[in-house]
Image (cartoon, rainbow, N blue to C red; front, side, top):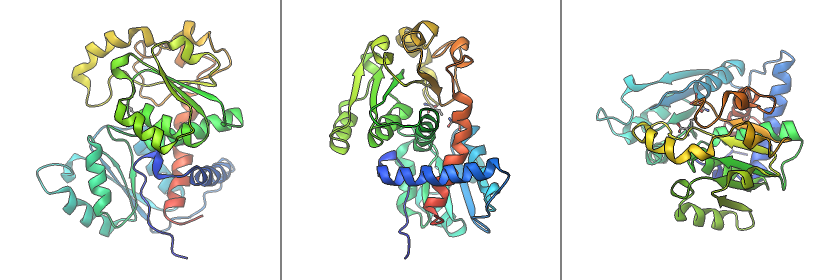
Length: 308
Ligand code: CP
Ligand code: NVA
C-alpha cells in the first residue's frame, strides 16, 4: 500500500490515533537507542532544515535523529535566500523538494510554511512558526505520559502568553483527552478566532482561560510556561514584562501544586517567566523534555516517511 504524503504544520494535522502511533514508534526507538541499537531506517534519506530563526533543540535533535537512523540532513540558513527577495517561496519549495526526502522548516510567518507545504513534493514539518510549534507539543505530551503513565482527564496548566506554544499544547492536550487551562492577562489570552477553531475541532475538550494563575495550577499534573516575548516580539519585551509580572512561575505558585511537574520548552528567560529555584528544582522536567524532542521526532520521521 502506498502511504499518502502528509505534512505536520499544526498538531491538528494528526488524529489522536496517529499521535499514539508516533509515540509508540518513538518509545521503541528510544528504548533501542538507550540499549545502544541504532536502526538504519533511513539509509540514503535526506532531511532539509530550513530555518529563518535561531534554534538549538529543534535543529540539533532533527540532525542527530537523522544520523542515528542512518540518514543525513542539511542545515539551510539565511544564505540560501529562503523567504527573501532572492526567489519566491514556491520556486524554493518546488526545487528543494526535488533533492530531499523531507523538509523541516522554522518560519517567521505561519503563512510561509503553509505556502512551502502547498508546493512541496515531500513531507513538510513545522519546526516552529509564529502560530504553532507542533514538534515541541508532541514531545511535551510524550514526556508527561512517560512521567505520569497516563494523560486522559488530567489537568494541564499553561501560565503565560497565549502564544504558538500555548496554542499547540491546547490542541495536543485536547486531542489526547487532557483538560487544558491557560492563565494569562486578558490581552494575551487566545483570541476568538482560535477559540472558535478549538470548539469546532474538539467540541468535547475542556479548554479554559483564566486570569488567576493560582486557580490554574491547583490540581494540575503539569505547569508549563514559555517566554513572555517570543522570537520576533523583542520590541514588545518591556510592555510584556510588565503585563506578565503576576504570572511568573515561582516557588510560591508551585507550592499550590506540589505533585505537578514544571515544564518549559526552552530557551528560558530566567527571572522573568520562571525563577531559577523552579526551573532547577525537583519538580522541573525541562531537560528530559528537551531530550525527548529527538525521540519523538524520530517517531514522527519514521511515520511520515512510511517506516512503521
Ligand atoms: N524548544 C525549542 O524549539 O528550542 P529551539 O528554539 O532551541 O529549537
Ligand atoms: N514561543 C517561543 C518558543 C521558542 C521555542 C518563540 O516562538 O520564540
